[in-house]
Amino acid sequence: MLNYPKSFLIMSSRRKFLQSSVLGSAAIVTDKNVLTTPALVPPVFDQPIVVSTWDFGKTANAEAWKILSANGRALDAVEAGVKVPEADPTNQTIGLGGLPDRDGHVTLDACIMDEFYNCGSVMALEHIVHAISVARLVMEKTPHIVLAGDGALQFALANGFKKENLLTPASEKAWKEWLKTSKYEPMMNIENKLFDKEHDPMPGGPGNHDTIGMLAMDARGNLSGACTTSGMAFKMHGRVGDSPIIGAGLYVDNEIGAATSSGVGEEVIRIVGSHLVVELMRRGYTPEKACKEAVERIVKRGPEKSEKIQVGFVALNKKGQFGAYALQKGFTISVKSAKEEKIYAAKSIY
Ligand code: GLY
Image (cartoon, rainbow, N blue to C red; front, side, top):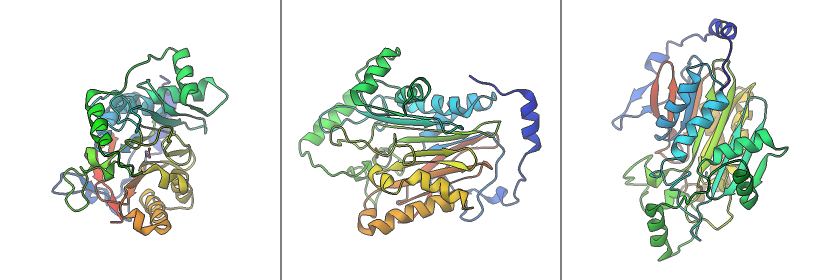
């Protein structure tokens, strides 16, 4: 782990941002015990900070925070953070225990990006729990950015990763159940029977989420991000979503901010979503407004389709301000800084 020198930390404490008087009233507790971000004035936080998609981001953030609070590098923090859900067999959208493709293969997509525009990615990687660490190694040890399929596996094995069976009994059972009808609808998990737009039994729960995207700013003010997923449940073999595509599922510009996404990857790829969000922040948009604009582009493309799918963006700017927006309600983000550890409900179009 790369620690930052004390001299730098003194400098950065001088750069503390003014605490807005809005901050005290920024968080509104709802009956679901989640919080709503204000539309126009995002809260202002001291660095470091880590934000990630969904409620399960909370435990991932806690791991990242160990590094951030010890003055470690944001890149190390995001990798360590997303490894938590990757190793959790009960999370059926990421890593071990991820729902398989229609042929029964668990195939993982992941990418990582640091403060120097370095990035690495793996697509359709099988048998390796920590796809994010393989992506980081692609970034650091190869002249390439993306390795896919067998080549990615070969690279992982050559670098000491252990070959494992990622298909847990629970995910195998779900796949066999799906095989009975084999209804192929390239929709996100939101289309599973667990999700019902009118009577969503568990907003943010297993019927309504996929993918961890994590963004962090360290004590030096540097940004990094990571994104990892098993992708769309029962997808076609070889299908790759937005998560490992730099600019779509994740983008980091250390001068401006970072963004990541969750939901139906095809729609995010079409608008190069995370890059769009960062570019909007460059033009002065708040993180939430930038995420909203990206979501609205998806709606504009196909309003009818957008009613049936979920896409959510989360963004973090260089001031440590964060925001999120989604197509559907139920998208949450987890936030951890020195000041708070909270789950916020993103505003949505529908
Ligand atoms: N956002 C994850 C996927 O579409 O695979």
